[in-house]
Length: 188
Image 1 (cartoon, one colour):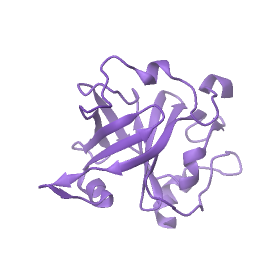
Image 2 (cartoon, rainbow, N blue to C red; image 1 turned 90 degrees about the vertical axis):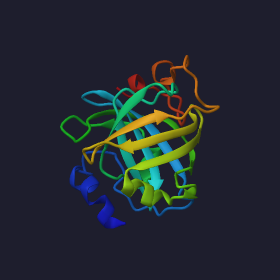
Image 3 (cartoon, rainbow, N blue to C red; image 1 turned 45 degrees about the vertical axis):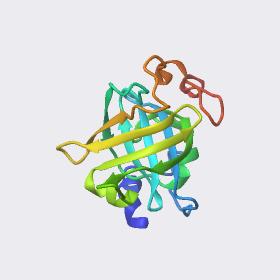
């Protein structure tokens, strides 16, 4: 696991930022978190617990419950499991400077299949296509992540299931943390 976090650690000065450096071991292996990050640009960080780290994507427009919406999801460095509870202000001059809250959290179930057979989540990630059912406080239902041509560019799409809602826009209307009730503005 330490090697998986080398890129994460190389981008941060832990004497200046309150972000966790890592160290917590995995327990269940099925957690997800979405953090609302007001950095140089507002975006939402989708993180899935896979193989002892939080595999991460930055979603500039935030997740959509409308299956017709395709959201860019840019793969970023893996984060330590401790990051799932991180809220705070990353200081100016540091990587990712700005405020961050836990916008949604819960568990996920891997629904990825190939020819009707389950695909382990690590293999699905490596092959560039995964389907997960989120059971969160704000988001529920299945979402598909598919890698596009470039290794870091993916698409996030809501599967048309019971969690789909073409009218509800939680990224625009539900701005508070599911952990603390605070907003990014409260941390500014």
